[in-house]
Each structure stands twice: as structure tokens, then as C-alpha cells.
Amino acid sequence: MKATVQISLDLIDLNEAIRTADMAIRAGVDWLEVGTPLIIAEGMRGVRELRARFPQVPIVADLKTMDGGWLEAEVMAKAGASMVVVMGQAHEETIELVVKAGRDFGAKVMGDNMAMPDPIAGAKRMEDLGCDYIIHHIGFDMRTLRRSRGQHADTPLDRLSEVVTAVSVPVQAVGGLTLEQATDTPRYGAPLVVVGAPLAIDPNAFRTAQGDVEAMLRLICEKVHAFGDVKVGKDK
Image (cartoon, rainbow, N blue to C red):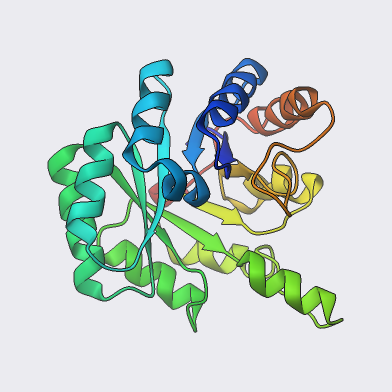
């Protein structure tokens, strides 16, 4: 799979999200993510508006589904989402229903292993249940509070190679990575690079970061795209 850059639109104002998406596409970003804050604020409308403006761009709906899997996947797929996100800690039946709805309505499924007791086994479980991608995720609250208390906070890089080796689908590493770390994840065999907080989105507020974000995104895209094809699945 080609090394791919995805921007996480963790915003609550739809107009700002559209402006940020315009900027990101100009900079070379490949995928747009309707982040959970935007889904909470705008729901299906956020996905529909972005789909209308970017008809050919893959769009991820970060639902973080824990229950009601069929309906959530159905409505977002019908709104124009290319991918929907289900949590690995959900019941197996929920993951199965998200996968089935995805197949029926033309959306791929991303399984998120955040807070799973064994993220490696969890990633494999989600692949076995039919997820098309794995998100290896360290949560914002956990890492932020632990660091503020002077405690150790894991990063997605700690076990990324293990996750990549355990599954045969593309992997994405998410959770507080620096610019250098995020753009280096294809070297681990994880071709899907996510740019969100704190790189492009203010980590303490649901708004676009200050500074020349477009120039930064352009540099990220150039570095990530230089990896070309990243071996996943049977090609590993």
C-alpha cells in the first residue's frame, strides 16, 4: 500500500473543518478524517458536507463505535464515509455488525485497539472479525494526565512493530507522536500516517493550530510519500 497521509479534523466548527480540509488537500494530504469532536458537533452533516466538497477523497468517520454498530456504520456510509471506526473493546457482535454494514453499504472498517489489555491480540482479533485496517492507538487523556503527573506514558511506537507483524492488514499509529515520529511510521511497516493534535490541531482546544500549518503539512506529505509502497499483508 502506498504511504498515505490522513488529517484528523478534530474540530467542532464545520466551516473551520472545511477550510482546514481545503488547506490539507492543497498540501497533498490523501485522506480526510471527520474526527470524533466534529461528529459529535455535526453528525452526518459533517460527513455529507465534506463528501460534497471532496467527491474523490477518502473520508474516515471516527465514530469510535462501542454499540449500535450496524446503524452507526450504515448512516455514516450513506452520508459518504469511506471508512468507519469501531473500538476493539466492543462486543465481538458489534464489530461483526459494523463489518457487515460496511460490506453492505460500501465502507471499509478500521478497528481501534485503544485501551485493550493486549493490543497485539486485540489487533489480531479485529482482523479476524473482518476489519480492513488496524488503528494502534494510545489515548489522549491517558498520556496527557500521566505526563502531567510525571508518570510514564506509552507511545504508539512502543509496540507498533509487534502490531504490524501480527496482522496482514494496513496499520495506523495514533497518539501524541512528534512530527518526526509520525512521518517515520511507514518505516515500521505502518503506511497510514495520521496528522492531528498536536501537529495540525490545537491539543487543548478543538481548533486548527496556529502557524503555517499548510507548509508543515506539505513537508509531511513530501516525506511520507517518499516511502512509496509499504509492504503489508502477504507482501510483508
